[in-house]
Length: 176
Ligand SMILES: Nc1nc2c(ncn2[C@@H]2O[C@H](COP(=O)(O)OP(=O)(O)O)[C@@H](OP(=O)(O)OP(=O)(O)O)[C@H]2O)c(=O)[nH]1
Ligand SMILES: [Mn+2]
Image (cartoon, rainbow, N blue to C red; front, side, top):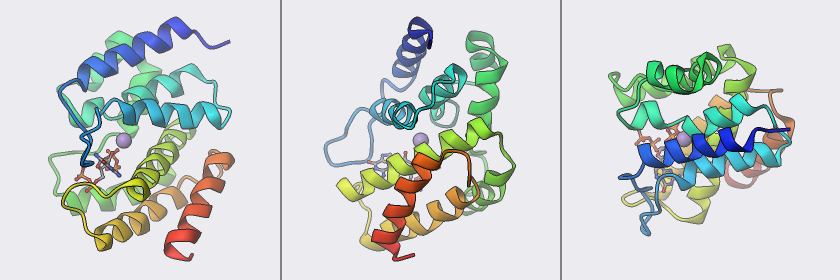
């Protein structure tokens, strides 16, 4: 049985961290909708492991806010902090290098981090089909799909229900 109090405490913490951020869509959706949606994809896929769900809620806090891995570790423990760290790009690197490293790192991360990565990409791809972020072209959308496939290919076997949904999207959009 999942500890709902701890799960909701984590959601509240993530909401506070992302409170000033919006998604890049024209409606400027509150950013927290993304981590919540990523977590929901995992629960829909049958994942009930609490640290995985907590890490999904927190997965963009270190990359996109003032939060540190050590703070996550102090508040939520090493297991959650480790998964969040595995899902965090080194933002001091140029974007192309970050993207290249995600492809290389995906097969090397833990099962739990692979699951969060699969859900993160699935959410973002569905979001891209719903509406283009401001300033994005169709070409950039297709590039994101092609890159996301390379990352999620490295997470194979971690969560078949999410992989099936991704496979269908890649077939529809990329024809592969
Ligand atoms: N599809 C979509 N994405 C949006 C939107 N608003 C913010 N994003 C975020 O933008 C990132 C994808 O855009 P990129 O151009 O690849 O990355 P950037 O953040 O370095 O600009 C994702 O970050 P991420 O979750 O950290 O994942 P990723 O960088 O590992 O892909 C995604 O969550 C939106 O409205 N639609
Ligand atoms: Mn994300």
